[in-house]
Image (cartoon, rainbow, N blue to C red; front, side, top):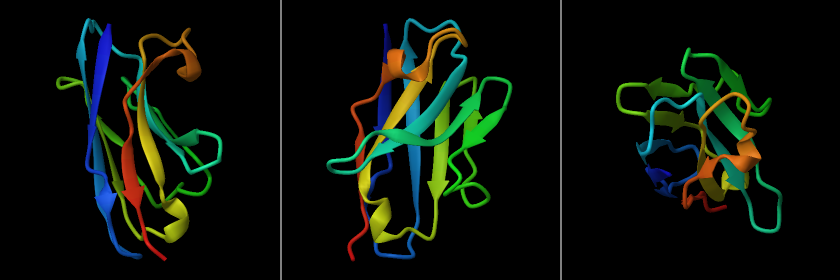
Length: 120
């Protein structure tokens, strides 16, 4: 079993910044990919950014070029600095860890979520 502990969410004013962190622990030999998804109230959960153990990244078009996801493989931790935050980015942000490439994100491990609130 893998546990994911998220941190870094909170209330931030428009234009402000946060850094999300997610640390994996438990029965880990290696994790293929880690990343972040977000879910706004009444909306579906969708990808923000992911990174594999070899450093390959994938971003939602809305954050491409603005956010840079990073990963510390030795610590099994992934980081997502977010800047220029807008009210529409208010959501619960979930950490995801795929143990192997064969396991899709939806069937992998999820954190409990961390709330990011950007007031209008």
